[in-house]
Image 1 (cartoon, helix red, strand yellow):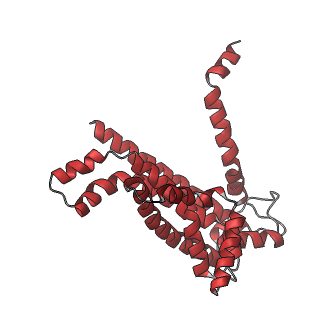
Image 2 (image 1 turned 90 degrees about the vertical axis):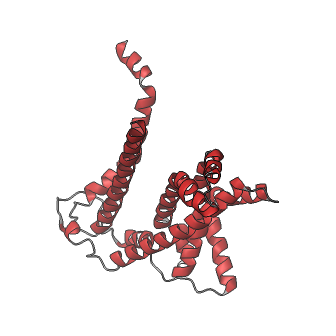
Length: 267
């Protein structure tokens, strides 16, 4: 039958589109319910269309404060994890030293073990050190958690780099710093950017590690979890929708820049 033949020819595309729809469906629900005006405290059933939540996204007490705190932690955790992860990735790829294989394996442990194990271990460490739980303990925990993901992204990029380009730069009398800044760093930049974006998303979205090590500090995921027990404000959906739209726009801009670079290179 023509229909069956068409399905067989496009089976991979159909499966990909269904998977994409499955992944995007929760975001669509969040977007729709950001325009809802519930009668009670819980925003789980559609009542009527309203823009009240969009006009006053900080109308709920402590919501924007927790959001600002999450953004600050995610920003500094991204900087720390990206700087350390990039250095570790270059060291693992470019240099030969003792225990290199063991260190490379240990780097991936945070990615393999359950988050609750790492969260409890970090809490034990902080308590034994006598550290006061709060902003700094959360930041340190997020850097340690995101480090493995940055190393993975940057390491894959560094391994694919052609060392002859750096050798050519040195043959043209470029110093080590100039070679790194003008040759190595631009080539590794996509991997570094990918690791940084991944670290930011993981840090901003993290709940388990934060909940163990935050003390009285309340981040946005913790605020959402606490609000869900008393009632879910519509403003939470507004913030979620805004973050989703910003992420999509960043991806589209990145794709546009990459396509322009490819077209310019061809010309």
